[in-house]
Image (tube, one colour):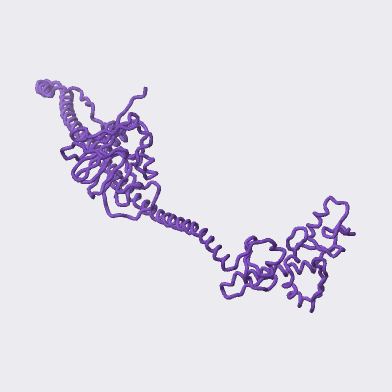
Length: 497
């Protein structure tokens, strides 16, 4: 069936069959499909009696506030405030938009072997409009739409824009690489978290196993002491009972014999009186038996302040480290062990690049920083032939710069030196071998001192007005461990005041 449409374009009437409409459309300019008011493709078009068409909303806005309904183009008065819809034009515009979209898709597929043609004139796209930033044909170039515009040949414009796009692509590729690197680090962190959790769980279980064993052994000893006390006290009381039983039996026998004599006939009593008296007198009267003190179990000794006494004894089994080494700050080449109190060089590991990780090779930091007060810790360097001890400022750790943030003494190539970031290295006059070193930080007075712990000999003191948080710092490249020495644990009881 043929569809007959009647439409006005630019004031001209066309009657076409749907079979010929498509061919006519390609010969019309894009301007023929634009509303004269909004200059966009018609949306819900209406037609006036003067044959001019407009978007319904555009026309109503044009008439808004006016007393007469004039045509925006020819100013001819319309007799209707609600003009009829131009369905034919509406269908034509929808077909135009669809065809333009389809041809645009074909244009994007040129690289796949499709030829790019102008959607309006079916001519080859040979020119690029710099103002509209789109390829056009030679007919488009001479149309009103591109009047006074700038043009370039397709190949030149493509080359220029490719170079420009390539410049824009470079930072995107760099950013993508950053994202991929960060994601890779995130993936590594997830794996490392699992490894850390498993390792830490083993350490926790091991330490609690030792504590449980200590408590179990202590329980056995205390119960054994209680049982021994019970046996001894029971033995004493049994011996007393046996002795008292013997005395009671002997006394009872004497009493019974005497009572028999008293019941005898007078002649018989008198005849045996002397013997009875002698027998009674031979069993002297004993003092009344008394229960000596301390025969009961000393419950207070076994139970009094039991948990405190066990805790007090436990201090011999536990230790307290004034500095805890943070494995999250350690260089991948270092191994932190022995309850986070020792460090040594080992096989390099693949570790995530977390912000806490030290920026300086073969080093590890304490977990707690100091920004006031006095602090002291002892370090056993043992036979280590290459080490550094000191403090690192938080700013230097974050920024990775050592301009004025590291103070330490070091031992290398058989000699001792002192070095701080802003100063030159200074040799120290230390003659004998040093195994244990005391580090003393007086933050408020700005002093960092080092001394030989075994001889109490001063080695070196840095003087500086500290302002940033300082972290204990250890450097080593040796498999011999460097160890933070534990401090003595004491338990005191204070009276309430």
